[in-house]
Length: 174
Length: 204
Image (tube, rainbow over all chains, first blue to last red; front, side, top):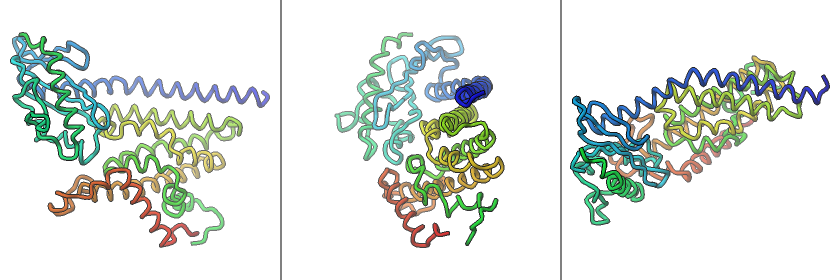
């Protein structure tokens, strides 16, 4: 085999071996990865809406109906993702049937550590409980204390929550 | 310390401090600055990069006789990216919380200059065992800098190290927050580099 042919063949062999190895690793880890994702969503959902026994996914990754043991709707869970400082600020919001926030969980956040990342702390999320789609920051005549030094993140969380509630309000009917 | 003739021990020990890729050669700075915001993230990043570095070194050394110089770079990149994809899947499957923290920096290990640099400068011309030692040594050197930097930044900016509280409450209420931002990273890597020069750690 001359060197030019070998150049092509050796590259081909490398690619084939790499592709085979990756397909093996992929098939082993794929069920695990899906399991992890389902577990994470599932535990986030039940944290946000503890009253529900089961969850029915209505819109993929953004709207779930929470059902009690008898199958009656006790609330809905929606996910908002308004733009923050370092990407979307994903928030899971649980609403009871009157449209008030009964549970809230800030999910994997990519904000600045020490500032925007504080939105994950409990005191920030707790301020939202019991509010409805009129939620906004104190600066904007609302009731939410912004995180000091992280107004953009706080505003993204508050306005994202308000918008999302309005968007899904028709799903609140029992 | 005089080692004119390269010894096996030298392959392992030299890259840790005297030929440290980050502090002496100043390569691989990008992931070091980006993922050293806390000691735990730094350690996770080091572990992922070390896995890729050691295995790519070993595999490059294994196949080097069959790789023509003209196409060595594409082949190295395929080998490296294969291991990066493997560690990416494995982290997602078994360490999802660490994967979330490291995020985009796991796929970016592909372009970590240290890994391609060692494949090119060392593994392509040395045996499998020597390349393994070189990969291990460089991994330890990378880990050392990353964890030191991560601990310092976490210490100054948050007042903790590896999540443990090590500063009084008055400090934690008003810490040096800028240390967690890029300027803090540049400042500290500059100080580390100055210390290396001061104590002549880079002299053979």
